[in-house]
Image 1 (cartoon, rainbow, N blue to C red):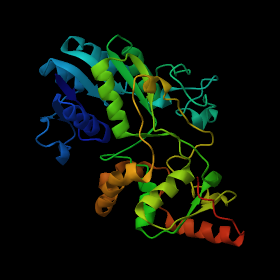
Image 2: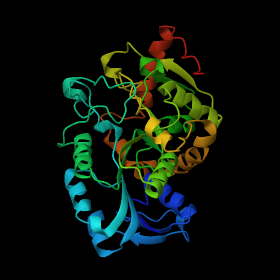
Image 3: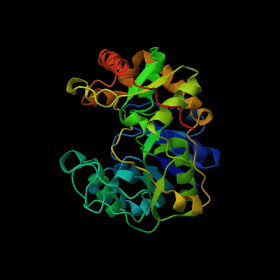
Image 4: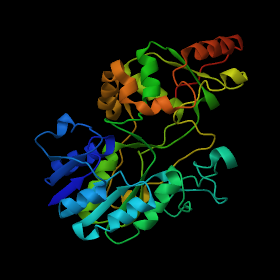
Length: 344
């Protein structure tokens, strides 16, 4: 059985390529943007340096029994893939849980203008979806609409984590620990929830869908939805580093950015994976043992993390503004803020 996996240099594609190779598939692993084939795939897959779009690459290769891609972002990308439908059997495409909106049509894309959405808790595959349009989430909604056809699976992950990430949210905690930060302020007492999704769990679900067939959308996330405080405590425990979490609300305006994390949200974002589990899939757990290889990989990037993790440079504020954090912590100590209890 022949598979082509796009995005094999990134966190999802490399995990899917490895999973399919382990299952005995003949895998072509496509990378783009000059990204190297991950070392763990060497000798296990056929490398392909991609120069055009996924659809253009399919037109010049194949046919393939199955295709996996995280690269389709818009309705146009979906239509282009459909134009190559004769070149493959099954297709698994990565969408996002943020295609969902609330009953008022509010989404993560519009949160700054219309207020944060009141999502279903948990979200399901039947929850409302945005109309296609500009922006990341609405673009993915358009892509999904273009790919509503038999033989196509649409995976909707949440806050993805895994080796090869270009925006590893966990770096927000890991870098602080590596830098010797023993106290970290958190907004909302660290109770915010943005459900996490492991790349390896996503890869297992993608492989299952490609082998057994599962049409339409599937939400994919970890076994439980940890809070920000739970995430920070789990990472600190896995790294064997001391960490006190300090509630950081009520700070002055010039410290308004302190305590905000890549998972911070004023209302929970939690999903149900019941449909995926009904197929026989089991999610990963967000725990020290599962995180360990990923955390080691993150620590290994510390010397040139700005190049490795460029998404952090696009934050509206410095995510590692330790001077502001120290000022905030001094104010919070003056107010005798109690540490956040360790999550159970």
